[in-house]
Length: 129
Image (tube, rainbow, N blue to C red; front, side, top):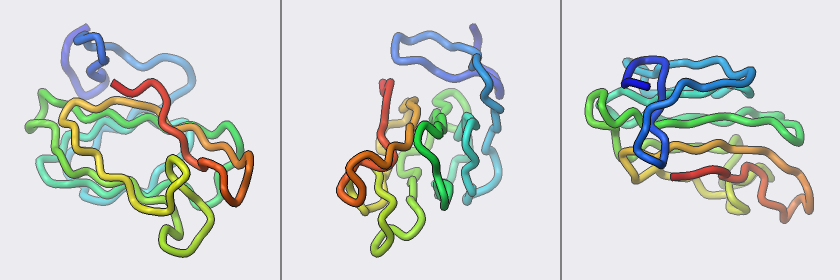
């Protein structure tokens, strides 16, 4: 594939079009996003974007994130925020801290799992490059 607002950069160095029941949203001007399950967010804003994950996730909910490196430089410093971090039980990779994306070409999916709550992983990163 080729770079566009509807493709993402894969870990193998190729561009791909998302498949499977995902809705693609290019984030080009906004600096805040309230994430929705089954969306792939292509981050193309030259400013850092804060993505707040869903407040009431169910097991198996997924969200895709892709820093679009060929659009405005692929911002380093985009942040994922689980609702209630610093006090709630939602976690990212088992931690209640925000997750900062410090790789300009990062692309991955998050899958929610409540297994082992309240000490489980919560939102877990899969397929990262």
